[in-house]
Length: 137
Ligand code: GTP
Ligand code: MG
View: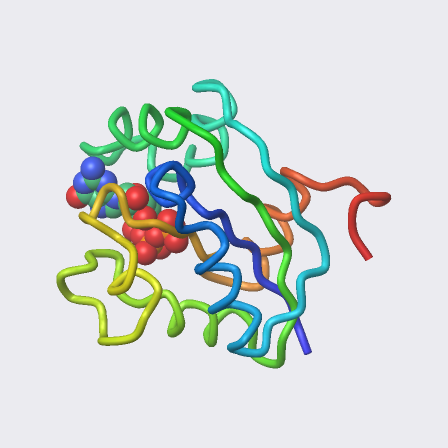
């Protein structure tokens, strides 16, 4: 088994989709190893998404991700990173497969309900960004 990291983004928490999204994640076989309801400052959001600094949507992304509460979590499952990205669907919900979390809950490519790590290495880095040793198991 291995791990991935997710955030339920501000669009989804503010629309009241948090419970339904967590339900879908857990029913898909992921175990929650750490979780917190929190809010990112613009500084923290900028740091988290620093890899996208040169992209034209970086400013919009940072503003959006600091616009309201998020839920951050470390998830465990066999093949966690790939299986989770399959569960959430394409970045743009218009292109996401039927039944995926983004198809079900996302409104646009910018406000797309959930984050999922894109590699084992980034899952580790992103989990460490939010959780210390005592906040996970
Ligand atoms: P994450 O799981 O959130 O990392 O999404 P992803 O891996 O499917 O997409 P990527 O890492 O390429 O982009 C990170 C995030 O930037 C996306 O999830 C979107 O929230 C945002 N984003 C990507 N493309 C666009 C865009 O064209 N416009 C805007 N406003 N935001 C974008
Ligand atoms: Mg990504």
